[in-house]
Image (cartoon, rainbow, N blue to C red; front, side, top):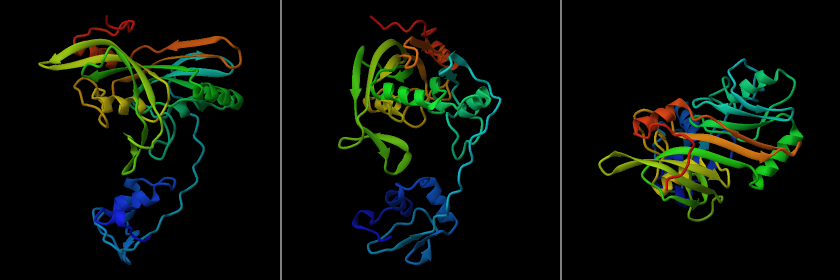
Length: 309
């Protein structure tokens, strides 16, 4: 790999990430690990530090080992809070701290492992929506491929109502819309950032529920959000960009005593059932840690989420 003008003076791990991010499984952490293992060479010599800077006309070599084929996720007898179920789909309430789908660092204990245990081989669960590990709330699951396709079509047509509750720093307007394009952070693929140009359109509607004072000149607000689009980390990034970061969000928000994860809950799902035509409308109880956070802030309880007047 020949260094180009945009690479000069940049850390070698970031240069590699810029050029190789299109390959599956390439992350900054993995590249740093390969550097430590001596698999990266600069002008024919092993690179000793990920922070080494590249110069004009440098040549970088890297040995990318073949990735092992993934084994199918296993069924596990895990707790599963089913809020709605019929012969075609189910809606489950995922707790904060549980990963939605098996990945490199989370092969077991995920929501999909629990769903496979629940299905017991009678059907194959397919997640229509996913939540971040630190987000609690409702996840929609299809039991067969035709329904999964139909539900994805509903989602793409914005025909599934997806409502969230979050506790944020500051006091947003009574209601509004956030329309900011998003894209992966080019230097850290695990993060998402707002883009002035390019990116993927992302729209979030919001309504303020209750604001409480948290100290001199400081406030916190319970807000209800409806996703118009469903992008990775959308609500978290949109709120941070507007100056109302989610409390407890270590990546985009603000840490807060009393909660150890982002105070974000996928509260409600509503849609017309593609197979039966009936209306499915499911709400998930607000988890105890968010209730306790509101109590700590002086709001007592979240209640029925009616907006402030």
